[in-house]
Structure formats: C-alpha cells, structure tokens
Image 1 (cartoon, rainbow, N blue to C red):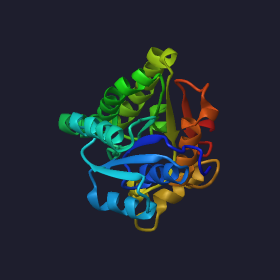
Image 2 (spheres, rainbow, N blue to C red; image 1 turned 120 degrees about the vertical axis):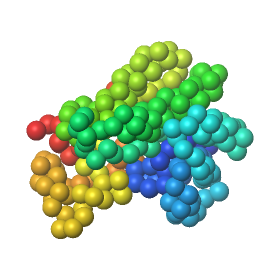
Image 3 (cartoon, one colour; image 1 turned 180 degrees about the horizontal axis):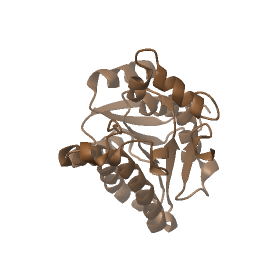
Length: 251
C-alpha cells in the first residue's frame, strides 16, 4: 500500500534478484527508504534502475562477512538517520546434496550465507533497535525449515536453524519493542530455482503438480507477505513462521 512505510528505513539482503529484489521494490513503492544489499553488482544495479528512486541505496557486499552488516546499518543511519526493519533474505541452495555428497567446506559455505549472515545483520541492527525501543526482523526461512526434502543436508539444517534463531530472538527482545518473524516460502519462481525450469521444465511441472495450488508463486507474492509482517497491522505477531507454499505443508 502506497505510503504505508513513509519515512521508515529498511535493509534488504539478497536484493539483486528474486524475493529480495521484489521486497526492495515493494518497500520503495510503500514509501520506505531501502538499503539494498547484495554481492551481485549487475543484478543490484537492475534493482536500482527498476526502482528509479533516490530512496533506494545500494550496497555491494558479501552478507556472510561482518563488515557488510555493519556497513549496511551505518549506511541506513547516515543516509536516513534511522533503521526500522531488517529483511534477512539472502540465501543460496545446496543442490539437494545428502550428507555423503557434502564436503565440510560446502557445509560451512551454505551455513555462512544462509544462517550466519542473518545473525550478523541481527547483531549489527540490535543496538539501534534497542536504543529506539522499536525494530522488526523478517527472516527468510523455507518450508525446508519445517520439513525434510526441501533441500539438501546443509540447506535444510540452515533453514531449521533460522526458525530457532528467530524464535529465541523474539523471546529475548519482544519486551523491548522488537519483533522477529520468519517467512517460509515453498515453490517460488525466482532465478535461484531456474534449474527446475531447465530443458522441458519437467521438475517445475512436477513441483506444481505436487503443490495443492497447482502453481508456483511469484516473488512479488512473498514480498507482499513481507510488507504485511513488517507492518503495524502485524504488531502482535511474534516469533512465528508464516508459510507461503500453496498448501504444500497441508498435504
């Protein structure tokens, strides 16, 4: 809704494509200032061009490195003098690799990008949130954080851990005016899932057939849920995980 977030400042990680880009554009349309973080310079520039707004501030950086989170918060405060919402959206897949096919280096890389990055951005934002007695975290989990089979061993472990991180984060700081919730997408048509559409798209067709809604969702649908979860309309929603999966978990 236009104007819903007027004057607020949002950090979105993974903003170069997919859900993160849709979130960044959605918050811009709703009146927010957005710090858009990604290491994909070309993709991030596309998000900036699409937004066509001076309220979108790009930051090129690796979310798994502490300095990127610190730089994002510093940019929010220097450019807009506030920080209200952090969307921890950046993530990568693991190719559905089981334990025997996953090296320790691969395990660490997936957890660094998918899980540790969220902890780093939480740590960087918390001092500001605590000082102002207000702040919202929207962390990206997955249906792979609720059931097995949505990823390989590393991705599934990371997404389960994100849900635990979010619950504990909310319990620890809810009384300080801070909210933390997760979104758990199912089949979302984004560049990260492009392999499912390769060739004749057999895998994408199978996923759609197995989904009760019989389709993939768009990134914009996840962004719409994000804006609701981050809004005052959801002010009593705390420490929970909201699936957006076309009924996958209801089967």
